[in-house]
Image 1 (tube, rainbow, N blue to C red):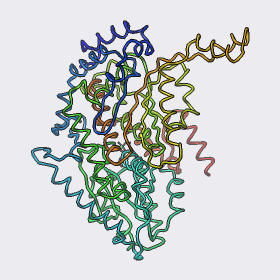
Image 2: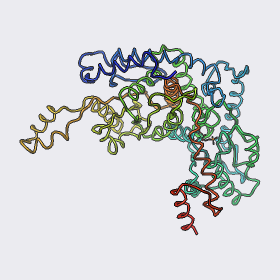
Image 3: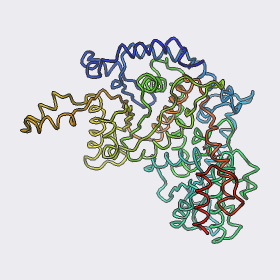
Image 4: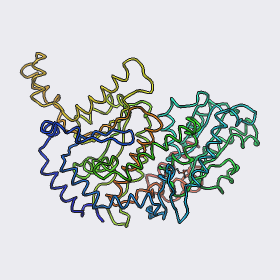
Length: 542
Ligand code: F6P
């Protein structure tokens, strides 16, 4: 059903108009319990949404919308293993990768398969980490290079960066994704083939970028150590055993997963092999356990006390009722520096859609543009626009209370900045406050009048703050699962299938055709721009 036809949608639009003149300052002034009322804790994550432009009535209407959209039924269908990815006729069961109780797909409990691969990962990662799995010249592995892209790269890369304190002291994790040869070349230039292990991570094992990088990495290794060395230096993670064999990796060195694991939801599967190698299997299982704790919460908590549901609803309120086009995610933790990039794929590949599950156009805005950088860096780059620009940009501030690297007062400064930003966005600075401040500084007359409008902050800009005690494998697992389910709930409300990604296919098909033309094959008819660019590139390359 078109989301705008729900009764709660109409009620929310009227409520938004009624609330138009109410500011966050007023909401805080009139309700001393607002923080308590608008905060929630689950699975080691604490959410404060009191700085969102909502009242209790807004929240009640949003929860009603979730109910009318059938969020509970869809959630149960996902956990049950129904084929909710209707355009690909697949179940969506990344939650089974971190489950404890049986999960059926087509009448078969898939947990046995999951545990089997986890055991294979435990055995392999243990041997590599203990120096028992050795390279072809009998040296221990010191560098692990994950070659993959999209979901086969961003999750493992983000998690390894986030959990660096848990990393094996003698192992380094590298990630090569871009088909730009610079990425592979600069990575390999720092490595010794004799001590390097490549993981070729690709669900389909047909992705152009990954295969190009894998073939070049293989050539680099074979040139140094000979063909026979491949078996000791290459492993694969895929659902496609035939293509893995065709590439020349023995399927004994392959870690499998299943079509019911979407690419952007796959870090919990063997796609997380690089994470498990780097932080060890025990910590990898803590990551799974953290996600499972959040799954349990999502499954069983009532909608109005359900973290991912509330995050989703607040996002819908901001996007569909307050007109926000984008959403900034700002981790106040340097080790989460790839978290926004990871979320970009998770959210934008899932909900960047304009037709509903039934193929009809969706009647409202869907997934927002997700972006962000760690604080405090972002403050000195784009925060000006968030504070005083003409667009409404809701922000998620994410901060661990304790640092992974305590260093003097650094973490106090970091947290103070985090809180200051959300406070400033909420409060703003009124004209009267600006006048008082400037007068106190001795400014008068025309000079004062000229400066006042520039120093006024409208405030009333919404944000969430998400705190955890520390960034650990468990809290990171919960944090990722929180956003996975947020995206899911939003997809349900917008009526989308959040689990396909047909929008990335057209570019892939056209690139395939253009490869040959750039290398001198007869030119095909294109638009004038593309033909002109091909001609220019061909002429310059000779
Ligand atoms: O960009 C499209 C996509 O299919 C993503 O969804 C996926 O994560 C990525 O390509 C990589 O795919 P694969 O793991 O099959 O190489």
